[in-house]
Amino acid sequence: MPADGGMGTTLQAPPFELALDSALWSSELLGDEAGRKTLDRLHRTWIDAGADIVETCTCVQSLSLGLLEQAGVRARS
Image 1 (cartoon, helix red, strand yellow):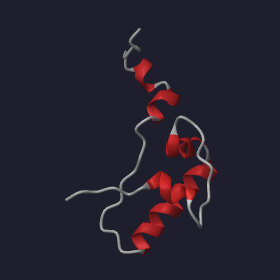
Image 2 (tube, rainbow, N blue to C red):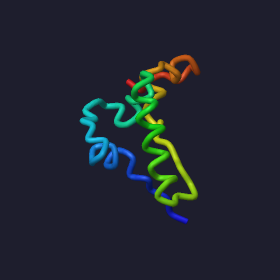
Image 3 (cartoon, rainbow, N blue to C red):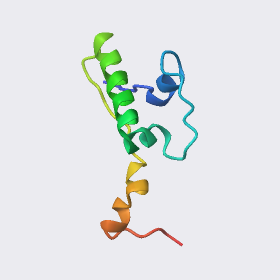
Image 4 (tube, rainbow, N blue to C red):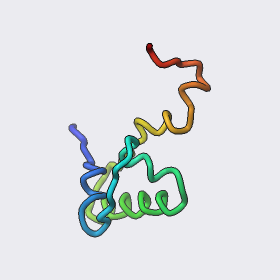
């Protein structure tokens, strides 16, 4: 079963209309309470529309949190 939530596209369209300009894409919203509430609202919108599966997009958030460095992963030079 293919799954694609289109999170970034949805967040840039009504009713959200966000300008996601950072390299973190929608993961930038995890950085503060207001952003996390927006993501919660987005997920609830999908559930209310009948979604059986809700996924999240945190693929680049580990970069901003320094999790790769903490795990001993170093950038290639």
